[in-house]
Length: 400
Ligand SMILES: Cc1cc2nc3c(=O)[nH]c(=O)nc-3n(C[C@H](O)[C@H](O)[C@H](O)COP(=O)(O)OP(=O)(O)OC[C@H]3O[C@@H](n4cnc5c(N)ncnc54)[C@H](O)[C@@H]3O)c2cc1C
Image (cartoon, rainbow, N blue to C red):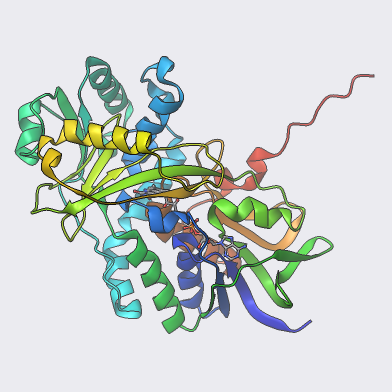
C-alpha cells in the first residue's frame, strides 16, 4: 500500500481546515479533501464568538430551547456542562493571536472584531428571572454583568424602549467565519499541506480494526490516520466503515440586511433571534434550529419570525431592506457537545465533528487538540467528555 499522506482530513469547513493548519504547522504531511455540499455549516454561520453565552443558553441556545420546549419555560436546563464552557472559553482566548497568525501565514483578515460583547436582552419578567438565575449560578470570572434598561441603551442607543434589562458578556465578539476557514486553509497550504478541492470521499477504507485511507470514484488514497471532519455528513461517512457516529443535521436559517451605517456596538440576543452587525455594515439576524434532515430550504414563516424579533429589538431595522437569506446544516449531537478524538476499537481514525452551534468559536482549540492527539503531544484540553463512546448503546439485560 503506497501511503499518500501521513494524515488525510475529510471536510474543509472551519473544523477540518483548523485541524489541517495545526497539523501542517507541526510539519505533519497532511492532505485536506473537501467537496462543498449544499448547507455546509461554516458558510452559513454568523461568526459569533460566544463561548459563555452559548454554554449557558444566552445565545442561539435559547432560541433552540424556546422552539423545542416552549412549555417548559426558561430554566437552568439550558446550562451545558462546565467542561464545555471551559473548552469554549479557552478556545475563544486564542482568537487575538490566531487573527495575527492567519494574516501572517495565510494572508487573510478574519475580521476579528472586539466590540462591546454579547448582550442577552430581557423583554419579559420570565426572561429577566432566567437571566438572573443563570448569572447567580456562574463563577465570578465568567459572570455576566446585569444592566438596567438605561445602562443597556448606553451601550446600544438603537435598542427599543420596551426592555427590562440585559446581561452583558464583555469578552464575546465575532469573526467572519468564511474568512476564518479560508485563513486556516491558506495558512495550512503555505505551511506544506495539500488540498484536494471539490472531491467527495465516497467511503473510508477499512482493513480489520484499522482505517487505512479513503476512496473516491476510481481512486484510493492511503494514510496512517483519517480525520473525519465532514460536518453534518460525518455520520454518513463513518457508516461506510461500519462506524456508528450519531451526528445529525440541524438546520439554521439566517437573514442578512443591506449595509447600514454603524448602529451596533455589541452582539445582541434574545429568545427570538440574535443580531450582529458585520464589518461592511450588513446586519445579520439569526437563526432557527430545526430538524429538517438535509433540506436546506428557506421558509417564509421562519424568516418572518426572525425579522419580527429583530425589529422588536431594534425598531430602526424596520426601514432596512433584506439583501439575502440562507440556511445551513449544523452538525448536531444529542447532548449538544462535539464528538472529538479517537474511537474505541478502530485505529487510524479520529473524529472532529459535532460543532453544532459553536463550531466556529471551538475551532482553534479543536484544531490543536486533534493535532496534539495525532502527534502524541500532551493535550491543551482533555478529550474524555467529547469521545464518541459516551453515546455507546446501553447494554440490554437479557431475561432468561
Ligand atoms: C445558521 C448557522 C449559524 C451559526 N452560527 C454560529 C456562530 O455564530 N458561532 C459559532 O461558533 N458557530 C455557529 N454555527 C455553527 C458552526 O457554523 C458549525 O458548528 C461549524 O461551521 C461546523 O464546521 P464543520 O467544519 O464541522 O462543518 P462544515 O462547515 O459543514 O464543513 C464540513 C465540510 O465537509 C464537506 N464534506 C462532507 N462530506 C464530505 C465527503 N464525503 N467528502 C468530502 N467533503 C465532504 C462538506 O461539504 C463541508 O465542506 C452556526 C451554524 C449555522 C448553520
